[in-house]
Image (cartoon, rainbow, N blue to C red; front, side, top):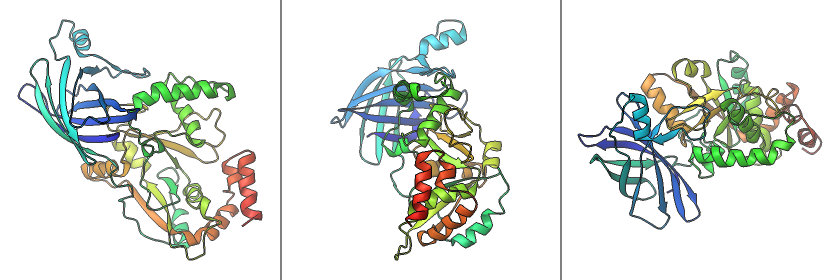
Length: 376
């Protein structure tokens, strides 16, 4: 059950239809997380429902509270009691549902839910598991390194951003979501805090992880050192992206290898002009936002010409495709290049000054660079 589930809630005459996002983590012998309720029609006041069931319980039944989304920024958990929140907004006591009874069942692909509140509101929903397909669904042409290199040289700077992946079958998916996690408020309150306590003494400059800017900069640092985050790394340089695509293949190419790497190209200028950014790590809304973080403590960010997308979505490719359809725009495309082209690609990139030593300042990067040169 752990992971992300999306669907639509259909309410009776006393309620409102809404988009549902169910984010659940496996914690010991339970599944725990939040159900986000975001109305389809205005006013768009969102709510959250804490969710906890035993892992063996299917079908299940729970009674829990209804929380209002306050929209506050830079707070670890922007949800409070609905009656308290609405009474504050309306300047008078409000009678609203405060508790909800939920019944449901689930399998690997879908979850069925029905609910009743303490005020008699009722409804049902079917939500579907995201990222069921562990391979990319984005179709990409197969091109040689020579062909794609000529195209990349003609890209206008900062209009597009690029990402390289060493396997063309991998989807666009953050390491946080690949690890089976989904609940970002728990991640913000527990994982980020734990890692900052562990690493704060090693940071040359302290970061205020109580703010979105400081928290984002810290996660960008963790991302560059292998800790799972809900970020995806991109670069303004297509050749930096190409290095990351080919980096691990220099010693493996040539012996009948028919696999491919992938270089993603994303229309950053178009996306940021029409899609509202949500510059927060955790949000109850569907989110893919691009951020250039502070570079304190992170010497890799500048040579990599890096920026990151922060996402609440497990299946990023499907979310982008949905936005493309809704806006009648095209944002994402990809190119697949044979792994057998890796030696030539890495040789060309070396002549451009794009090596492990330049992208990863320090002993590790220098050793990787010279090893690839001296032990090919």
